Image 1 (cartoon, rainbow, N blue to C red):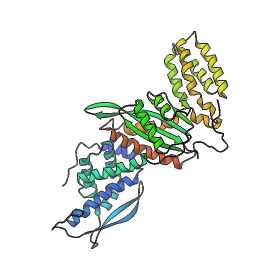
Image 2: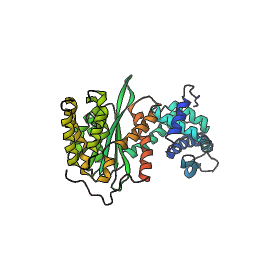
Image 3: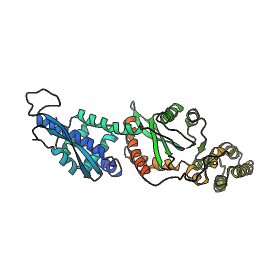
Length: 393
C-alpha cells in the first residue's frame, strides 16, 4: 500500500526540530532505514517473513552489519540478505542521500506521538519503499525502547541531587492541561554531572514526586548528602518520605525572587536584595544567621510581612554552609537544572500542545539524553579531591 504526502505536514516545524535537536541519536536513523530495507526485501521476495506463499521468489538469509559515516555520526545498519545474493536494498543509499529529511521524519514521529501515516508517506518518498503503518509503529516502539532503557538505567552513588519541575501543555480527553515534567540531576563522586531521571504526569502533587524519587532509589541512587530544590508544592512531603535524613538546600536565587512579593514598596527592592546577598555570601553559617537576625530586626517595623517571611524562609537556604567552601557556589541554587529547562522549552515550544503525555516524555527524554552524554564526557563540575565532607552546622 502506498501513501501520498499529507499537504498539511509542517515542513518548517520539522526543519527547526531537525536543526535544533534529535539528530544526536544516530541509532534512530538506523532504526527507520532498517525498517525500510526489510520492507524492500519482503517486496523482492514476494512474501512476508515466514509466510508460505506461491508467489515467493526466494528466501531471506539474515542480516549483515554495515557501518556508515553520516552527518550525525557513525550509523550501523542491518542490511537484509537473501540466499541467492540477488538483492541489495536501494533504501539504504536513498536513505543516506536523504539523511537530513529522515531526521525530520524522526522528529515528526517524536513530536506528533507517532503519526504513522505521515511517517510511512515520507519514508516511501525518501527511501523508495512503502513501509506499512504497522512497520512504522514497530520502529516507533524501538525508539521508545531506546529512551525507556536510558530512563531506567541503573544509578549509583550521587552526593548532590538537584530537583526541579516545569510544565508543558498536554491534550487529554479533549482538554488542554498542564503536565508536570519532574527533573532530577546530580553530581557523581568523580565530580561529573549526570541526568538522573525524568517523569511526566498531569500533576505535581506529592504522589507524583514521591513515586519519582522512589524510582531513583529503586534504580540504585545512594550516598545522597544534599538535595537542592525550590519550594515546589508536593516536593517537601515527598522528599521527607524518601530522603528523610538528607539536608535540603532551598534555591537561593528563587528565595531572592520570592522576597519581592513581601516588599511593600518598589523603592525598597534594591535594599532588600542587597541584604539577602549579605546573608548568602557570609563566610559561615554562624555569620549568616547573625546577619539574618539583624536584617529581620531592621524590617520588623518598616515591613512586618517581609520580616516574618525572612525568619521562616531564609534558614531553608543556609544548609549549604555545612559543605566544603569550594562546592558552595554550585550548591546554593538550582542553576544546573535551569539550563536544562531552557533547552527543553526551546525544543518543545514549536510543538505548543502535545497530543499526550507519552509524546511529551519522548521528546523531553531525547533532549536530556543529549545533555547527559555531553556532561559525562565533559569537564568536571566539582572537584572532591582534598574536600572534606559535610560538617555539623
